[in-house]
Image (cartoon, rainbow, N blue to C red; front, side, top):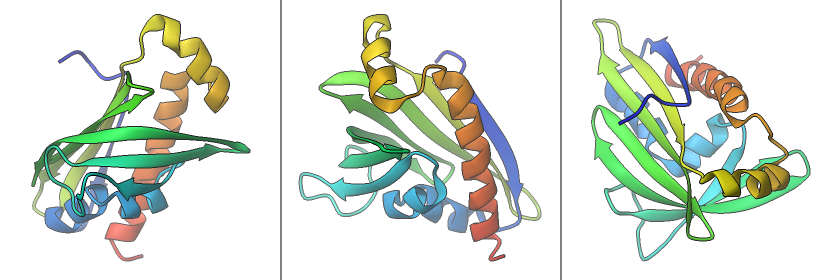
Length: 153
């Protein structure tokens, strides 16, 4: 796989299982993320599992949009999903969790999967013209909130 377009890492003084429970729960993740605001499970799914799909609600200022996400990885050390919109690829989001003696190191990464011609309409819809730069800032915020919540602060 190619290098991610945006990534960030943080050390969390909490059990890896607790951190995984937060990043793999779309409802909990919505409370931590900057643009992602909520979800609705599809096709009878009710929990994270490979192949499960959910409709994601996103927001940035007055802008609102939805996406379709399919979970591709759901193991103790990795949670990931592929995002599409109107049947077109948008992004891959991935959370890697590496246990340490005191807790774990969490790396959040994203890959921009949009075809070149699809970037202008999606940037217009979201108001983000420098997606990689914005995602780096969003990841930093999400990881800080994850650390705060997981450590019970």
